[in-house]
Image 1: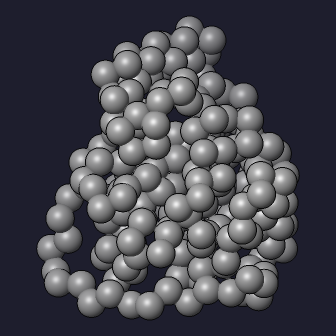
Image 2 (image 1 turned 60 degrees about the vertical axis):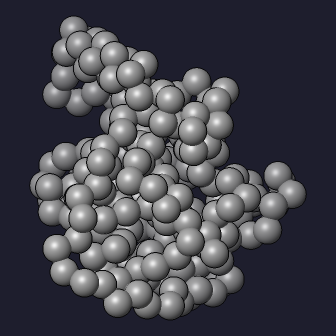
Length: 215
């Protein structure tokens, strides 16, 4: 079973990614799952240095790093629309927003503001993973989270960080995020102050995308 998933960029061309699939390996034999884990571990060892560079060492996670492509058309940055409430969120998204800010509060960090533009993009990513039956930070439709945001005209000093998960419930997805040092680091990163959450219902539960940014 893969680990949860996060991608981060701070004015850089390198992202750090994690994905959490809590669907118990549906469709995979134990040997197939072991092969996937072995391949992931090999890639992780090669690319750990990029995670260390941008978020520090000590997380003991398995990063998969991709190089974003350059947008093909000029982008006019837009000002993010943020709020501290849950207006514009579905019930599941509002629940996760509250759970995330509870963790921020326990860590002595300011609560995230809700960024509606990031939420719209997170919804597109979750829906894309569901409809196209994949689970990865690099979308065949949108590319990396960083590129997706750039193409949509989103602009922030820190952008491109992403957590993704598949789980039975929204609460379970958040538990998995907080149980993984890499995902937890994105949620509790003091340079992140805004979040967008997109949740798509699936036959097995929920497909979740969290996108983060910082001023």
